[in-house]
Length: 64
Image: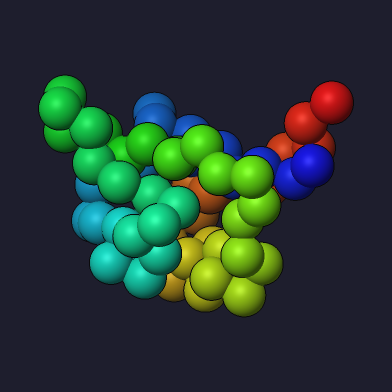
């Protein structure tokens, strides 16, 4: 399964991903973006988050 990953060292915490895809991305208690565990990640929403991320810190990785 493909899963989004946020490279936190590059993230500027703009919250665009959480606004566009609140089911996929959320803010944790430490103030960082986290990827919520889902059985499936909607590709259209991920594409929008990746396209609009100003830091280009969202990537898709293949999970075993």
